[in-house]
Length: 196
Ligand code: HEM
Image (cartoon, rainbow, N blue to C red; front, top):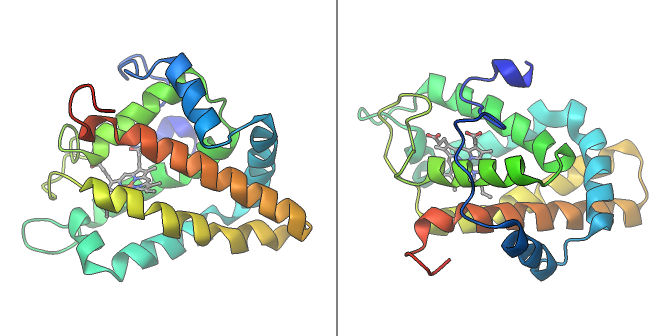
């Protein structure tokens, strides 16, 4: 699937609003999670390592969500059953997100789409992209907590292409920083005015 054909994926589209976080604020955030050019380098490497393993990564993460009813809940319809088309459409965007995390420049378009993803987890925009009657809001506590499985489970995949343990460690740390940075940005709509 090319990025143009992923349903609901609007990265770089003119209708994605400008992030309320300035580039200067973002630079300070990067410094706060120790994110440097070296991490950009190792994320690119991670992208090459992960590119042909995306479906396996998604199987694992979806398995994790599917085996925890309190998480699967956010993909369910009013009848209490998961909505297959919702799971499928989000899965395609999630796969693209893995590559975006590793390969996109963290520029204004990237920053703007982080706000969009935050809004899509928050009641402001959840369900709208896919037109589904699922629960309207994902609590912030789960977004933050999810950094742990998303980070710990990626390590085995990073180690599968024969890189040295030191290089795997560098890729893993870069991934951890990139995911944390993003969840911080996604928390924007959850914070009271002026509190972010
Ligand atoms: C959407 C990643 C936490 C449920 C998405 C998307 C990505 C993503 C990449 C698609 C964005 C797009 O539309 O382009 C993540 C990451 C998380 C996280 C990295 C934390 C580290 C959670 C949690 C849940 C969840 C805890 C609860 C089960 C969903 C749902 C959607 C979604 C239901 C679709 C939202 C909509 O209606 O547009 N997530 N997510 N996510 N995620 Fe998450």
